[in-house]
Image 1 (cartoon, rainbow, N blue to C red):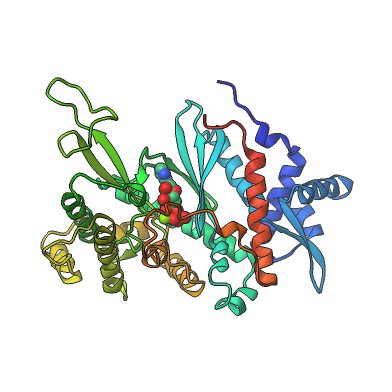
Image 2 (image 1 turned 30 degrees about the vertical axis):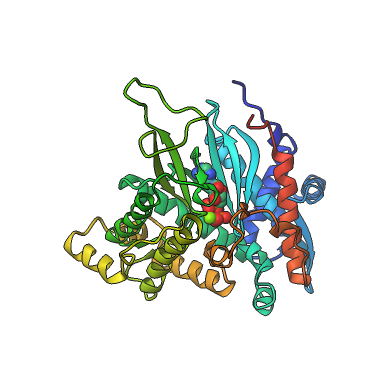
Length: 407
Ligand code: ADP
Ligand code: MG
């Protein structure tokens, strides 16, 4: 297979260096002054740099900002996407970009392909986007927030998610395989499964329920609480069991426990916390209650025993401790300080994961999509104008980046 580099064809190598220069300048400057961009891109100033700047601005990879003191540019989410994708391509993690399958509150989910043709998932973290939901309460807060800090927080979210996915995977949990992380993105294996939210019937709700409670307890035994354990973040793999003649069920047969095994795969880790966290009990109970409530509503199943309590989880951890993955992740580079920064930001802007959706979902059991509408919501003030421009830009960029469909 030959590498289709269409997505990178837009930019000359000079453009690319100017884009990287703008990114480097964004670390210390909200608005990067043009002379600094020249300097950081390592190009001699003059018309070349200006031509590149204008190319990049035209394609919305950087945006001009007029500041009280000076004019300059900022990197857009589109520019950051571009840099991340370029890095993934260089490292041969991603060969081509396919369809976007999800627009979450805080992320975009895109199917990408490896050069072997196997499909993978690119998750692009976008922590700035939550302000759509919480625009009123956070208006003042967000007004003082720079786009650079959203990018930084999105990068922290990606680092955190990657570190936890890796630790969980290495310790036998059923999670996607983490493949790479770059900037605000991660690449992971694609799970051929639907979220629990989209499964209308299960042969034995009781057994799936207890399996999910076991996962919550097992996580706790390894020092962790998922923090957003709900029907959107649990994918259900359907694995047919062959009968004694080796035949597997066809579409006409009803699914039963004998012919189908359901295997939950857990995803979405940016809000994962340590069992020693100050609010651990609240998050633990919330995870347990999410599942209880959902099984009651959707499958009319209620267990005769109460779900596991935080005390049970603690006792379990004392008696039979697993490896402390909360500690391991800290040591792996996602430090406690980073965790605190990210947590504070997520709290302040009300990034509450998917749990809020499911709690408010009420009777709309047929409403299957969690994603979709946020991007179109009309902005209510200047600040969200900027967010919306960013999101639009990046959606456009992603369209532009489509190299070949995943079909
Ligand atoms: P968010 O933080 O926006 O909720 P998630 O990681 O939960 O993002 O992903 C959103 C949706 O994308 C999931 O509900 C699932 O349908 C799909 N998805 C995410 N990761 C994968 C994966 N590795 N394989 C298959 N589908 C996935
Ligand atoms: Mg999710």
